[in-house]
Amino acid sequence: MKRKWDRSEEQFFGIGVYQPKTNHNIGTLWRSALILGAQYIFIIDGKYVGQTSDTLKTWSKIPFYKYDDFDHFYNSLPHSTQVVGLEMSDNSTPIRNFVHPFRASYLLGAENNGLPEKVIERCHHLVQLPGEHSLNVAVSGSIMMYDRIAKMG
Ligand SMILES: C[S@@+](CC[C@H](N)C(=O)[O-])C[C@H]1O[C@@H](n2cnc3c(N)ncnc32)[C@H](O)[C@@H]1O
Image 1 (tube, rainbow, N blue to C red):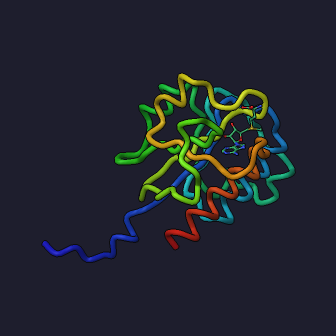
Image 2 (image 1 turned 90 degrees about the vertical axis):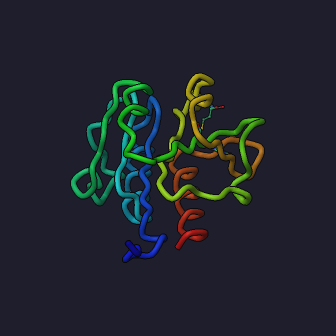
């Protein structure tokens, strides 16, 4: 049977943080996520109860998932969805060369420690933003989401 929709409609993404530390940062990321079109947000092994920096109360508009650990997150991934880790690493693809998967869960690391090696090893993709120093976690996530929009529409 002929498909009745365009391939570009077979896409969605979510974004989240592993072991988040600062509620203010996470609230800022959620606000960007909602504005830039994320379909869900999540945290892994962390606490978040709401923050004034999330002026839109994103958790009330799209699903906010809370996973106990990385395995819980990984085993709960939506069907056919790939994990895109953001981290400065020798194995990371520079963002300018990165082709976003149609269905993606973007994963950021904690403000103090970043993504641990055991998590990095399980990401389907690892992407690095420009610069020699690490960016703020909310800023990093926002740049990534903008890049997706710019490349995929
Ligand atoms: C403040 S950084 C963590 C810095 C941590 N002290 C370290 O050295 O690993 C928090 C998160 O933002 C993201 N991030 C920051 N700068 C990045 C960059 N240049 N490329 C990709 N991700 C970045 C990563 O997900 C990182 O785990």
